[in-house]
Image (cartoon, rainbow, N blue to C red; front, side, top):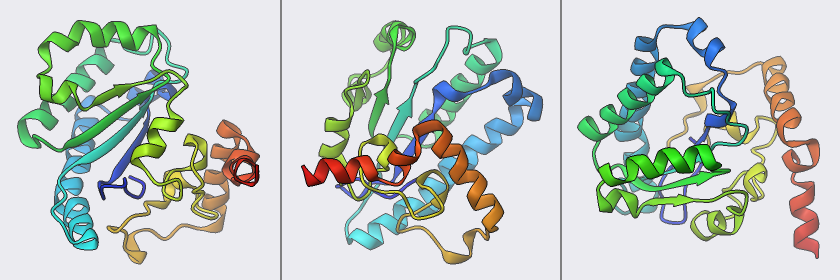
Length: 214
């Protein structure tokens, strides 16, 4: 979870294309990931939506989900992972309905588009209207729904969240200072992971700043 959209909805960023399915299932059984998904949705309902509603002084009950499929290969969706995704969707639909404001799929290659085309007839029209699919031309759209100060540099915005990095800062109206105590060593490791993925210029906002100066 990272900051909010222009409407005040919490933003959730997922790097689906980076999933190493072999490592994923070597760490824990599928049941543990189901529990984790349930915890994420519960946190959204119990903490994020009320915090955003209070902060923006209006009722907010919607999530903006950014789903990055970059580097996804045809082998990523084995049977275990498909079952996990299906279970996750069932939890969302059955126990946390109407919680989606927008879903923005980026780097959606032929694999995703084929899978979505097969599933589309079974998704109701209201939900389909909330799904926006892009290849690498997503930045302009994201900036129409999220202020650039709230959008991470690696998605085309200006935010870097200081030394924590946007992927671990948990920034938003819901954040409490005591939520997590992280050592400088861990902060550096987290930062190094994101620099390796996106480059130091992007993470420090240098490219974004040059673009503004032009």
